[in-house]
Length: 427
Image 1 (cartoon, helix red, strand yellow):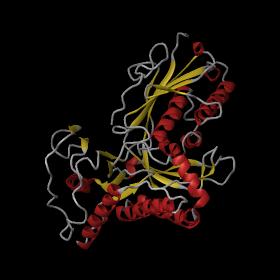
Image 2: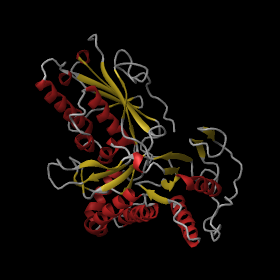
Image 3: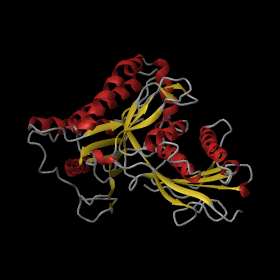
Image 4: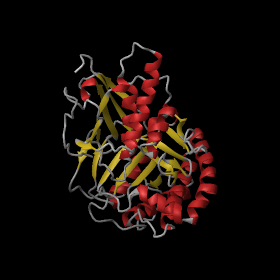
């Protein structure tokens, strides 16, 4: 092995869309049928961490491990495309400076770990591909010459929504017009610091794999749903402009209205697909009813909305709310959905930050601060474990370079293989 270790370790965040991406007009380049907009979540709570190393001793084959299991890098697959595009950028840099080591000619070993269940309705592919691109960009020392938007164009070819995880805060994926995909990339709408007050409560209804994977589901919708065509032409362009303005104004009521309407429109398009696709279940719909009643009662008191729900292609709810509203939202959810596992990231329960609440838990009454006209019978109390887990987080920053070289953050050992093989996934 060469005496210098050429390696970088980066983390990248999860993002949850409020204007949904559903449908591709080019399935190879992953060009979306419409623009989308997301909130980046805090990496202190949900993240993918990736170590990338280049070494002349690795031979000719690139290798990648995800959560301790080696993944096949298929010749015409998404991983291959992303790695090759990053090597091309490094090659261009080397062509300008003969002194640089020829890292683009060496194989890479990449090891990635998520700290949440993969394929569970949390966008693991988005943070994973963003962390892959961020770690290769750091390894190849591509920034600042190559912009984050430029990198997002490559991340998009791995997983569409990954392009949005190249930024923190509030992020738009511009679908673009060019068949080459050159203008299909992510841009920052507003940084985390612009509206840091927004928090998210993720209600994990099921962490099993989805019945209809997103990739297959969205193309069926494109082929068969008249409603999707209306969504693409009329609904999304208007909402993108309106929600961007709401974010600039930190206007939670408008943000909430559009977020919930867009989630419902997206799931209506799934229902309009032939045969129909069902991602939400009875528990998902009960959470919708509960949030709608909380907002109705709050507005009846002359106040604004308390929370907004949104659902991706799965049954899990993501509830957005201003920080001040979150204690009430959390207690209400825990009343109707008892015994959900909960790691208390912000010490709302008073047992210490990150205190773990798992297994059988005492029954909770409704908060005394609920709006006066709130109908407590809007949904029944559910059986224990109907919501399996609650994750409380907030708007966060973009990818972080944790380390250059091989140190304590490295996921690879001295031989360039994973330190942890078949690592148990933890939530």
